[in-house]
Length: 279
Ligand code: SIN
Image (cartoon, rainbow, N blue to C red; front, top):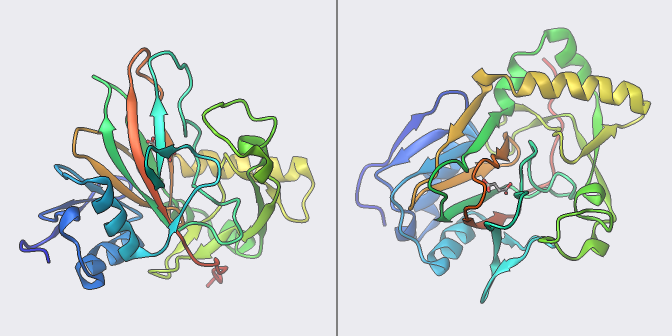
């Protein structure tokens, strides 16, 4: 039971900052209802000064839905429901540095993730989010009409499959299936229209030649990452970001050489996506 009045302040570009809310205290679905509704409006929620044990992290996530155990990520010791997002001082690459939305390669993509900072570098390591509601809204009516009739193919093969380079991932043999989703979806919570493609996992437009697909997708990628559609989140001890994969993209900046950055991520199952209708 929360004992203070929650405040939700929209951020520039995408997302909202939530205050007067203690994630560790959430016990019931009615406790999290304001967060659920806000995700449908803003796409990502930012929290500060949260103190959460792994068990409390799991408890709050399970109020939103079943936990999806990512088949490729390493897990935190003793906590199979929590994925570890780690960059160590000797590693040059980080996880999630390309713009993406998680799990678009699944037939029923995950709803979102709750990322909790465990160790932050002395500087850098921010995560940038992009707003797929605004990206859609600011297209021309002509392009919106076309996109609402299209589907895109998504895959994990090139990121998590046998040929993938990042040794932090495992289970490469599970990266074999592709999925097809509408290019513009009706957001499952708010019904708002959102662009649903992403540079990491989308591999083409269904029924189009590769060169046609990449021309359209690259135009949309450039558009969707316009600075006015993005927000850069700076992590501190106690920071939490909770994003909705159906409304946002994110990318983790890799600008902290020789330092450690450790995050705990819990991903929550979603629902099959429905195409938006143009009107
Ligand atoms: C991710 O892409 O899931 C990780 C994001 C981050 O580490 O900031």
